[in-house]
Length: 398
Image (tube, rainbow, N blue to C red; front, side):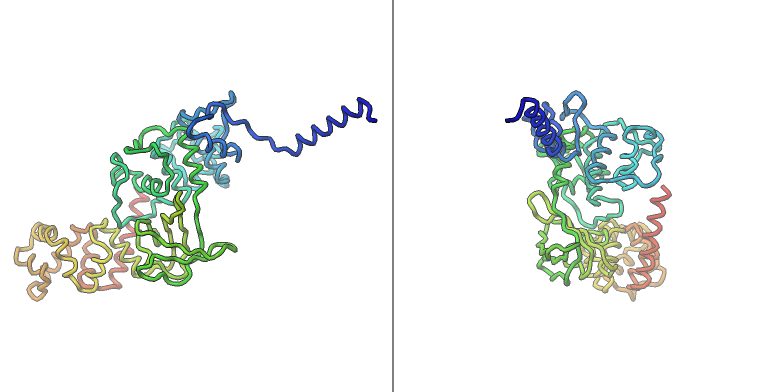
C-alpha cells in the first residue's frame, strides 16, 4: 500500500509529465467566437502566426497597421532580414523593425516617396492585396500585360495602380466574399480581412517544376516534372487563365520544353495563373513589341506586319493611321498609297514620314518603326532591346 505521501508524489509526477508532453495552445480570443473569420483566426493562432492582444481579445473588425501586417507576413513565410535594417528611419527602434526589414528585403513592402515607412499607419485593401500577391511573386513591376482584363470591380479601372494585383487576387479567390460589387480600394483592411486572406493564400496549391515536352497547340495541356521527388503533374489550363512567359502575357502553346514553370491554382483547385521562364524566342520578342505599343497591336498583327501581310492588319487600324499620316504632313494620295501598300508610288521622303507616323501611333521610336516596315528582323531585335533598356533606365531614374 502506498502512503499518502507517496500518492501525492506520484500525482505530482503524473501532472508534470502531462504538462511537459502536452503542447501549450494559445487560447482563442473570445471576441472571434461566432465571427465569420473564426476558423481562420483559430488556425493561424495554432500555427503561431497570429496573436491576440494582452487583454485576450483579437479585435477582428479593427484595422491592421503596417507594422502588424509586416510581422504577420514575415512570420507566416519565415522571412528574416539578412542585410541593412535601417532602410526606413521611422522604423528604427520600432518593435517591428526586423520584420519590416525582412519584408523590404524580399520586396514585399515598400516605403513612401519621402523615405518613411509609417509603421503605425493603417493598411488599405489595395495595399493589402499588393503585399499578398507579391508573396506569390505575382503582380510584380517586371510583368507586362498584352491582354485586356475585364474589370471585376466597377470602382477599380484598368489604370488604377493596383488593378492587376486586385484582379489576380480575385481570380485566385483570395478576397473575402463581401468584397463586392465594389472593391473600395482605399477602405482600411480589417484584422479579420487579413486573417481570412492570409489563410487562403497559405492554402493555395502551387506546382513548381519543369515543362516536359512541347505543349500541343489547341490542347492547353501542360505536363510538369515538379521540383523534388513529386509525381508528374498534368494540368489542363482553362482559356480564362492568365499565362506569362518571361513576364509577358501569352498563351499556353507558346510555352516550350524545359521552361521553368509555376502553376497557381484557385480555391476550387483550378489552374488560374501560370508563370514560365525560359530561353527568349521570337514569340517573346513579338509579345514585348506588343507591350511596347501598349497592346494597340496584337502579337498576331505584329507577326503579320513582319511577314509582309499588311492586309491582316490595315483594316483594324486604317482609320486612325490614316489620320496620323495626314497630321504629319503626308498628302491624301500618299496616305492612301501607304494603306494599300503601293510602295512604287512613294519616294524615300514619304517612307520616312511613314516611319514617323507609325512612331507616333504606336509610341515607339522612328528607328524601330522603320525596321518594322523594312521587315529587318535583326534591326527590330536591336531597336526593341534598346527601347526596353531605355524604358528601364527611365523608370530607375524617375
